[in-house]
Each structure stands twice: as structure tokens, then as C-alpha cells.
Amino acid sequence: MLYDSYRCPAENALEAVPTGAIAYCPRGNALCLFWGPTPVSTDDRPRAASPVNVVAEIDDIAPLTETVGGGRVRIERG
Image: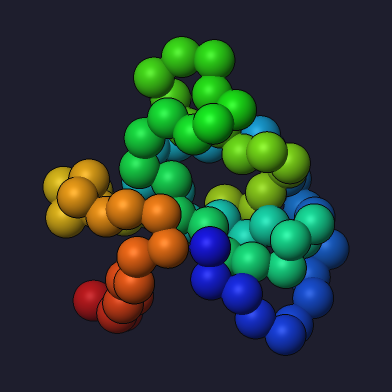
């Protein structure tokens, strides 16, 4: 999760999100990247711990599959 100081309300928030989703989590005030199952997933698809607003999607998630919790990533606009 990427934490920031701005706050935004939930809009069309989801818990089940598509693979590659970039989503804002109002509850945690964080930007989240979803590339596989999460601790709250019930199958192989990503699932947020609380409803999130999907704001973008990552086309190629392959580089993220080697990222471990707490790892650093850089998001660039393409």
C-alpha cells in the first residue's frame, strides 16, 4: 500500500477487484496494487480487506509477481 495524506470518499467501492487493479482504499487512506490472491481472497482472485475505489489497471503484472510485502514499486504514467 502507498499511503498519502489526502482523503477521498468511497465511490462505487468494491471488495472483489480485477487482477492488475490500482485502487484507493478510503478506510486505510492508501493506494493499493492487486496482482494476485490476498489474505482475504476466497479463490485465486484478488480481494480487498475493505471496499476500495478502482482508479486504474496495470496491463502487465508480471514484474509485480516477484514483489514481496513491504517492497518498493514506482508507478509511472505511460
